[in-house]
Image (cartoon, rainbow, N blue to C red):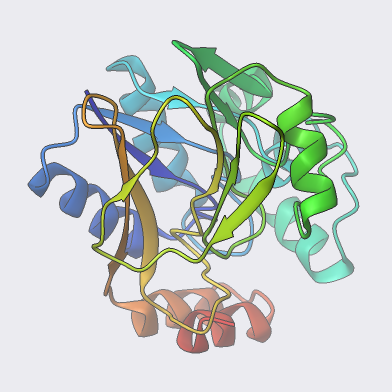
Length: 247
């Protein structure tokens, strides 16, 4: 089983299409969406509809804080411009799309794999995994062999030895990383729709459950076109600029 992991699509149709094409080309058997389908970008209708179709075909999808802000009109600590986009997005989604966002679970766990947007210790508080302290708390909150999450918008990989020692890796695109089952792992898969690590290329990760390897991918896409659509929609300019710079 090869699972394509995509987080933080953020209503970016161009990026999602590019990632799905890449995942298909690499033979992914299943898709997993790790939250924040919406927010920031100009194509929420298309993105939510495409993910709904994928879930109907067996994909995994969990809720992110932007999904909660749109689907539940829940205040999840978004800053003013992000909240403005959440309100704009809500007005453009039909009842079925909003119900889909409201119905997304906070976590999905199966066969020793946990999918969550932010962290395992308090998934509804949307706290970021920015240091080994938060990573350790997240690993302590689950028995899963490997945890996949998003939210941070920058790829990262952490491992915990059998005696509890934490180690950190910086993933290099296209280089499979062994993630053997005798250790525990937490992977931040990066952002498909709004990378913030200085590289504007869309980011996703491929987990090969049989080989126990994890490979990050960077996929060029028409980020200039996606940025232009944000401006044409009258959304904040800085969200368009971020797509151009990957910051």
